[in-house]
Amino acid sequence: MITDSCYTFIILSVAGGLLTLLGSVGTFISIITQRRLDKLQDILEEFVSLSYRSETNLTGLMYNLIEKYQMHYMFPLTPRKMIFTYIDINIFFILVLWATTLLMQYEPPFSSIFILQIAPLLIGTIATIFFRHLLRATINLENPLLNTIVPAPEKLRNLSYLSRFVNLSVKSVLKQGRPTIFLSNFRDNPNVNGTSNLFKVSLKEELSFDNFFYYLCISNSTNPLFISFGDIKFHFSPDPITKKPVPVHRNINVPLGEFPYSRLPNQLIAHFLVFTNGEKHPLEFIYHLEPGTCFFSAKENPQVTVNHQILYTVEKSKLIINECQTCPPFFQELSHLFRLNNNRYYIHNPGKWKSEENKTQTNLLKLCQEKVFID
Image 1 (cartoon, helix red, strand yellow):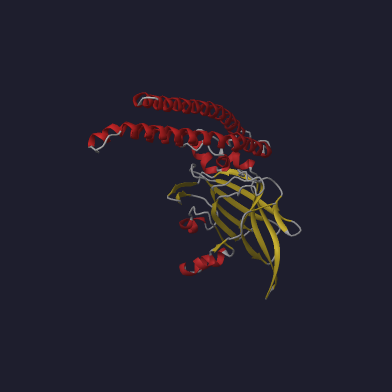
Image 2: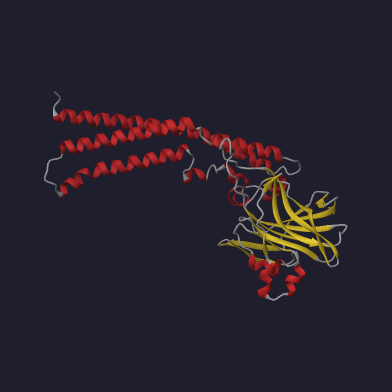
């Protein structure tokens, strides 16, 4: 028969052995995490270096890098479950052994000194549970300290994140996304004067960069015909079959609104301003849209510049225009409505909007409720 005092030491030695094994698991996880961090940082550096090579089409290469980044970012599910199960069982037995040792040595009645005696065990229990949380967060790369080193894969399409935390050219990155304005004639509306064509305006991106505020003005040779502004953020659901997350998409279409036009012009001009949280001057894309069979599209690459005439800041999800020397039509009049709320607004008759009073102007401002879709 084992004596009580000897049995107590046996239980404590078993608990110490389990703690040692738990520490070994922590070392094993740290080695795996370090290798993943090194690989992820190499891919991130390669992605950043591509942003300075805007003279060639690197869209496919950027897409492959983001997919490769996600492959190394995600830890396989089966070994992750095995490690987490081992950690949970190990910690459970440690806590049971500590509690058993405490009950074996406890002699009533209860006193305040007992609280001081069990304080180290309580502190050890809290530290063990915190260690468990730290290991889980580390193997999932959900630790806030790691997020500053290796962002989640979807952050690589987030222009505001790249603009604020990564040293790269937002202009070059967005150009690789190949954004373009496309007008499609999808319905004919008979009216008093004849037939009025209804054009649907879309923003097409070859690579789905998001999290930016935009302002779009489409004009003919004399007057603005269509104005749209809003905040573009994408949410891609996991693949319905494999359940894997989707960090980026190819050939995405963002509906921006619609407007009627009775006579087809020879050419339309579209001014497209892009504001990211992290810059102070917007990017300006100028498209010369030419008619096709039942659409308008840009035949040539747009002119892309940084508009130094506009100075802005982002404060509390609102875009503040601090300085505006030259800008597209109606930009200043609408600037008080610029909010980062993931909505897209449009005005299909800017001339009428300007002539109305403030109360009726709100009615002419429409919300585009069509969802983003993939070609």
